[in-house]
Length: 428
Image (cartoon, rainbow, N blue to C red; front, top):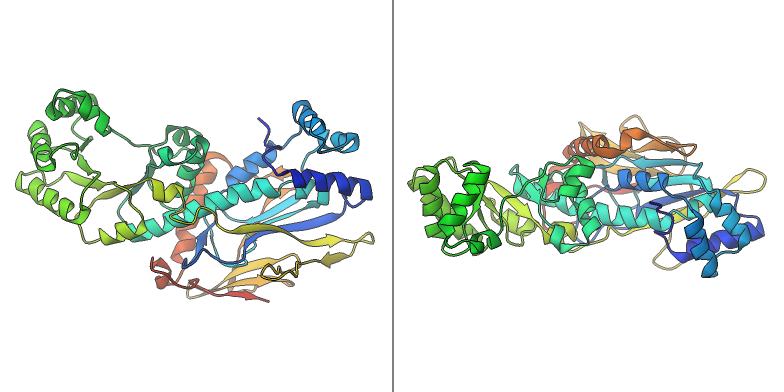
């Protein structure tokens, strides 16, 4: 399936015009960056690189796509001929997936002809904005959970394919599992899930439902105990398993008090090894509020797949340099009010002191210094995608890199209260 029409019309009308005026083959550099972090956030998390590279490999205009564009009058015959042979032949450098980012971090840098690069704007932004927003929210939830595992359970609160991407982004940021089976198949993410309230309501009694689930899944399963009366359900669950039940799930009520009561009841009944998992519209703030409660794990849905109030990462795609006819590179930038951009191809590094980040350094000339970790790495060379960033192994590499990158941040970066970026961005 082609990704070529996952784009905005103006990208193709620009190609059409550039082919006519002779500028389509000018070598250009485009960069993706966020002018600012969402209000109150201390850092962002880069996610979506592997999905973008997969989509880039599938960016082809077949007869059906070209026919559609011609019928709509978007392109003429000359542009149709160009698109029929379209293959991205340029270079891409990027922050590694899972890396943290700050205002003006050049998280993606695309070099190629104007025509082959400009058509990638919407593809890049639609993936990076959504995935990075979810990963950024998920990372805050991981911090709030303070070592307790989290599962992503938001498939029913977003689009069907968005759910797969959301599970991927949350896993990169530190979630341990997802309820989405397609995410498990496509990206190798661990999956989890047992039963909903409907299963209990189906049976003649709660005890019958519990017996059925235990017969099917064994005593290590998790029983949902808040369909009717929580105390009675816990009593039944412990009795049916002789105190060997894996876990109970609570999906309603005043969670701090309910969890404390259930923990006391389980211990009193001898089920000291039975764990408690909670769901019920959690976000980073409610997770933090439960830090003192005897919760063993969390399931998060709506908040994580929606970016916890910030569904887009605020990234933009801008032309920063192009070659003149004589081969000289020219820096270009917008000067419009409130949307000024910084021209020129960038280098970027994370300045470290004793292993802790002190600044994001964005250079408009020169190279990253010896006390700065380079952030931009090649991911596409002469149109060839580096397979290390693709598939399930790419996801695992991103997850591992995120853990290292987050560990470099100063301690106050983990605070979920409103605040300024954890480190400043120095443009040099």
